[in-house]
Length: 427
Ligand SMILES: *Cc1c(COP(=O)(O)O)cnc(C)c1O
Image 1 (cartoon, helix red, strand yellow):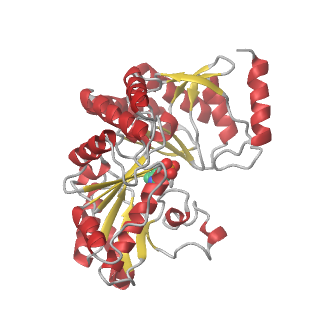
Image 2: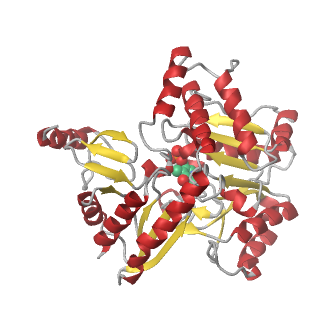
Image 3: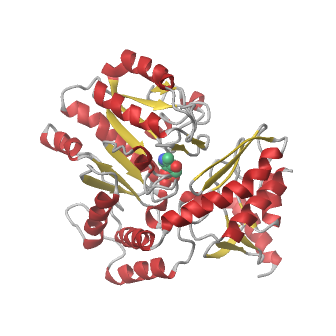
């Protein structure tokens, strides 16, 4: 492919498209991708890059995977889509059964939707309606922790970190939620019960107006790439029980092995009342998500006025998405994913360790197949990106964070190359 094609694509993109979290046209031009296979993206000008981002946590098995491709093609021969109102199909039933079988124990029902944000919207709607159904409509606020990220729609924005999420822009429109300090004790730190003091105070003050606590278990993703102590999650579960609040766990980013456990809740052996899944659910093939809940949540909503959950995306339970999700979970189960993720954690630890010596670096942290280099000053994204691309690696830093969550199929050499590129970009 000639470089003229490459450059004209960038020009035409800049004339008509709007990219995520960006002005349009974007000051930093995007890189045109021609194809992707395994761990690699191939750009239009022929350069090949290891995808250190797994396309935002999603592509856990790598691109263009023969088994996932086959699952989609096979399903395509039967039907690409059919409405889910009044109809059902085998892929949806099999996937719901599978998710309930592998999710933290005690969940009993699955609601499918088309993206992580919508899965969280549905979770919030379930939690609010649960209390309306029980005759307690004043329980309509949510408590969450700072540095969270739950999506970009309005209800989810209201529980994103108020600073990162630019709440001031929409202050009149966002539901006013209750924010607790983000957990401070790191994943492998020494537990200290005073970590819970502020949250307990907030609960004592607000519990009567609260419907639920919503958080990302163990790993806070796009709101700061922070890893916190499993005991925090256990204590939140206990406090929800004590104050009779629902617990919503947003595992859109952490689900399907990324943190070293199949679900991050497993680090603390906690089952939330409502669980959100997305991103890696389809192995990164299609936009798809699920909201799982305990049976009692569904029963309370279904058995009281008005007796229905008023939500139903047009493409709910899309058969192609269900089929590829089933195939992705099968690939995961048939692989030694826990060994792979553990090995990647070790390679990230050793590969990123030299970054600790750099004056620009505040902290390096690794959990499962997630490696984070936090810098003292905001990252010069254009500079870092150009430098890692020159070394054959794709990364997308933001704010003070350079981070990688490579596909689980990356080799030691590939993870080493990602880490070396990141180091070289920060020197
Ligand atoms: C990405 C993400 C979402 C939103 O998912 P979309 O598919 O982008 O709508 C919600 N919660 C968490 C934790 C996420 O990482």
